[in-house]
Amino acid sequence: MIWNKEAECMSAEEKEDLQLKRLQEVVKRAYENVDYYKKRFDEVKVLPEDIKTLDDIKKLPFTTKTDLRDAYPFGMFAVPSDDIIEVHTTSGTTGKPTVSGYTQKDINIWSEVMARSLTMAGGGKKDLIQNCYGYGLFTGGMGVHYGAQKIGATVIPISAGNTQRQIEIMEDFGSTIITCTPSYALYLAEVLQKQGITSEKINLKAGVFGAEMWTEEMREEIEKRLNLSALNIYGLTEIIGPGVAQECLEKNGLHIFDDHFYPEIVDPKTLKRLPDGEQGELVLTTLTREGMPVIRFRTRDITVLRKGRCDCGRTLVKMDRITGRSDDMLKVRGVIVFPSQIERALLKIEGLDPHYQIIVTRPHQLDELEVQVEASDILFSDEVKHVEEVKNNIEDYIQAEIGLRVNVSLVEPQSLPRSEGKAVRVIDKRKL
Image (cartoon, rainbow, N blue to C red; front, side, top):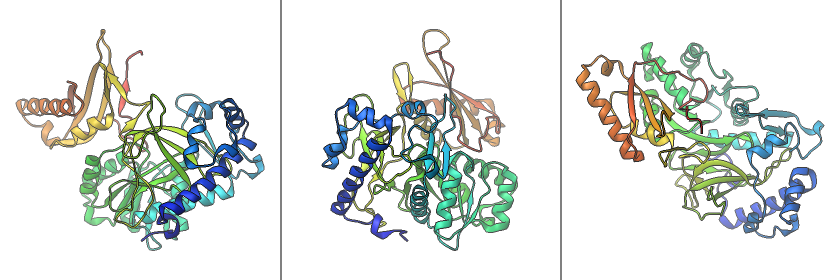
């Protein structure tokens, strides 16, 4: 089922005409109403009327997270404060948070794109959607909530945490779709197994998982343990929240709702635009956002764009699964390493639980990378010789994946921290 066939299945010509019209409108609105954009456009000597084609977007300056932080709290708003009916922020763990303001029109757009997302996961009026994303200033909970209500589903606003209650609700209410981070989905599966609750005793058919990077191997693990279709959702507070892109049941890329969010791929070093099919940093422009238009936002997420008609019938441009972030990638002994590469290697090995932590140190002049991995109960109780053999195999798998030899430590089951939100995968102890 497709929520909005007119928008999701339009021809390339129709799409480009609509995108250009909306791009011209949003550039004009930003220039006339946001001091930051007027100053930046004037610096690069570009005026709204200079945007005559979609390709002219490259004339516009980029917006970064630092720019948004510097405008804290309301400096990026394009409407009077009494037109803003809701605000959200990022976590703000590294300085001031970025603030996102919404008019009623923006909330309607957010509801629309999330309705499309949940419909892609098979959601409809008969579904019970257990929403385990956090409510409050975090955008995850509210975004799913709006979309679930728009499609007429029953939303269970349970929010993050309280795992025992999550499981009781899942069993008693018969939840059919769950929304949370992939790492929390694995944790729920782990607790279900401990309590002897098999996947046949729960009614889940799909999971909409996002807010952190995860691999194809992680998907297979979640699907096996929870007996559902695990689908990827993508979004960010600076653009709108969840609902920028969503994977359909074909599971071969995330559909970007490009009638509302215009995507580009750039080289993260040169900032030159790259053609479709080449990997680089995703840059997004809000085409319809009213309260806080954002022009050419550097997401730092590394992906690939692909055009064409999907087997599901949609013609929305697709993005590949995020493989890393240009600002989160680790440089270890001159080699670029993404945590997702290590996760992919670990999930190929039997007898490991998919819980791990990467620790980077520099004890002398050389970087050291340690990967702590939870062994299963069976493996951990095995004889030392076998455990050592598994440890060596893991090191071989990781070396084949990233080109570096690492130190692997097998730790006891349940010993690594669990997260009800985004999992902390990397601890960098180097003083760089």
